[in-house]
Amino acid sequence: MKKIVLGFSIAVVSLIALGAVKLSEKNAGSSTGGQLDSLVNDYKVYSLPMPEGLSFAGEDVPLTDPDIEERFDNELLSNVYFQSNAIKLIKKANKYFPIIEPILKEEGIPDDFKYLAVAESALSNAVSPAGAKGFWQLMPATARELGMEVNDNVDERYDMEMSTRAACKYLKESKKNFGSWTLAAAAYNAGNAGVNRQQDRQEEDEYYDLLLNSETARYVFRILALKEILEKPESYGFHVAPEHLYQNVPVTKIKVDYEVDDLVAFAKANKITYKVLKLHNPWLREAKLNNKSRKTYYLSIPEAGYYK
Image (cartoon, rainbow, N blue to C red; front, side, top):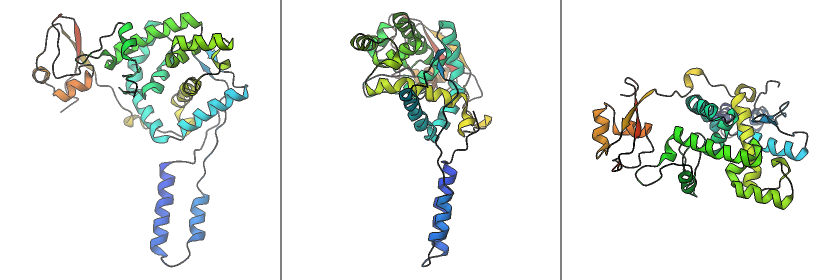
């Protein structure tokens, strides 16, 4: 793909704004139209070429279909020109992909599914209006069906490693059901029953041949657009210096099979603050750990030297 020079950037917008202010200050009462027109004429926003071949989890995307091309183009444009978000995702991917990738590999899930987590939560412990939570946006009932603990005291949807494994379990079942990783991704959004229902109703088997609700119709294309940008950021004008990338703080796992009445005291005993304890263990939802059943938990304690 040829190098793309993106016209829309914070620097250019700032230049236009600054230029307008300076022109106004210097030439108060005089005509500045010609000079301002020159600044505006230098501001350009470019359409984007289609990539030469596109796939998801080893399955080709039929970009020769005009509907498919347009839908992908819509998502690519929306995400490329949301520059602040793209920069944040590039930085966060450096921090979280090294945790997600080996789990996907171990569970037999294609590496491309890490971009599903990006589409779901922007790589954060997000909370949806419907009640889905975590990097993989699992609903409470679904999480429990997948073997996770979800209550007011402990919510394992906020544990990235555990929720990644739970998502893998769901995706493997969907792949078994549909025979396609693309449909498995769509079913992660619409549910297996929802996709099955539309297949039967429309007498079609492939994601790209189905007419789906607007959210699911966009879903795979958004994943594809995010994959394209994160795999080739500089091709889309994104330049992030290595020292600007977010880094993961190494941790030691401490086995806890007892109740902890005071997590503040527990944090202090481990030479960290309560805030840092919660940052690395967001699945702890209260200031204590109820554990009358003496279940085994593993708390992440960051190595010394990374926090004050």
